[in-house]
Image 1 (cartoon, rainbow over the protein chains, first blue to last red):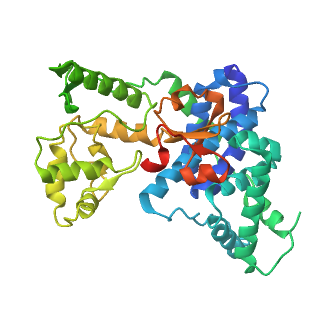
Image 2 (spheres, rainbow over the protein chains, first blue to last red):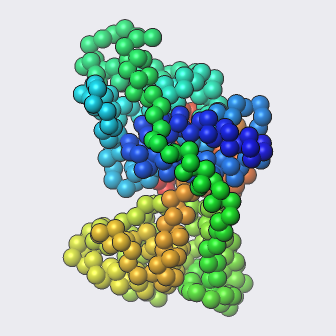
Image 3 (spheres, chains in turn red, green):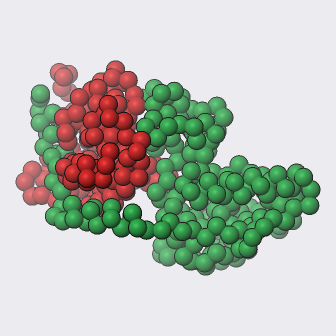
Length: 161
Length: 235
């Protein structure tokens, strides 16, 4: 991939990469830092990019790698205090806080998949490629993550899916 | 599509802060010109039991074939570490000549995970001497094997650096290096998770690399831990 193609792809996806990082890491500074690091890594490794992948799949892979390592560092730093912090925005603020709290209860791997799924509507197959796991694992992780969100929000009294 | 789906979709809606694109572009341009120069001039001294001293300088001090092997291995591991390809040191150390208090402090410092930091007071608590933060600082200051025993991961309670044998700039560089080097790597074709620096991990192709935050996370999505570097033990 040449530099021009890379720069265009980076520009096209910067917003979505940022959205994933922001929701996983909880604040703007860390999210921007993560996107920047991910793009630098992707740029440095662009020779190893395989054209049978969509560019977005590859960029999301690199971003997820950066964000997950950041979450690992937080875990070792201060136990379970990696909860997502409140974002801005006045509308629906209470609902938003509830959702953040509910997402914080979702295990890391499932949370990463949820973020990728809902930011860009990625398919199960793409998610499987991004994290290097099977499509069935993607499905079960997403279902489990959503079930935990639902349970936390609704007190677990809703059986439908 | 149900209510939870709708909520999640709205929650994850992209909203980039203004100027993000320009800042990223500038960072990309800067990275192409930036020189990644870490000071690599270490002098390694070893005995037949392991590495005894690591000091600024060059060359090797070793008086037996076993000692030379340890010194060579330390050098190779340090080069990988500084290149961001290693997150742990497997070369044996020889700290036998040190006072027992200092040995305990160094042992506690070795247990601070790659990429993490702890304060002097925290380390003092961990060795059961909560009031000995200053003595801990002195013991670390006299660390004969910096980097191999990661005293650079110990910082002041207020987050500023303490003194460092190789200078404050080196401490900053090491902490930054650790911040940008992932520790647990999974291979998407073998579904095995390794510590960065494991011989198996070093053979994983770039396109097959995924990062995990813990071995438990990796297991939850179908990966197993490497039997050589045993990442679960280190975490």
